[in-house]
Length: 362
Image (cartoon, rainbow, N blue to C red; front, side, top):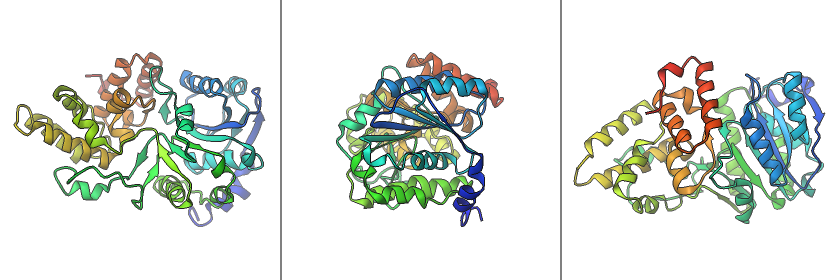
């Protein structure tokens, strides 16, 4: 039932627990559906994101996948155009769906619709302003980061990526990461876009949600005929790495975040040791960076490179509790960027999970 009838069950039964509140900010032709899951209460970073949306002329429709305290609800309504509190069913795509269906009668009058969630810290003060950067690409769909543009299985069979780096949007699992997506008027006026969300099969199975949500939407975008692109441009990533000096190349390799692949993480440690002073040091470091990026995904793996070389203003939160080494790198990068609010929130997340003693910046 979870897959076959999940959407019907949600719409007819579970959604009765949904509550919609009118916020204090006005209507605009640019809207952001901001999905949050503040199970331990709102954080300063939520309001930093909301202020950023308003500064760039986006009316926030905030969707919370958890019931809010009266105080948190009151605070949010100051910054929100609308607030939707919903039962936590369907992960972020369940929340996005409720936000888009709430806007269904306004979609064809909007100039831009963005989907964003609090699985990342955003915006970083010295990085790219993502909302105008996405608009400036002049494309119908823009993601902050993409995934499966290189076949991870093919890459894993070798010592690195064979031949030149191939960025292929036609890979059957290619998609744009769901933490930040921007849609232009051509998509919002396309009846197929609304139908995708109306018919979306809700599930509380995370793997199924990623497949039907991120990958499903990504494949719809690729095959819809709409133009699409990504602000974290890795189409010439191999050449980007060639521009780095030896010390920076090694630093990028050392700061790779690989939270869910112990074998690849062990290979990273081995490569870093074995390549010191080796005649093929640059080649082996570069090959491993390409391999780790393809297998892990750039939103995770390339935190350091993405911030410093690409001004990509997002930091994923989940590496903090997925792996101690990844947590340490994340903390150190936040500290080096001077992001004290996000750094303190990262430490708090570790404390809440009893992991603070196991992870220290290094």
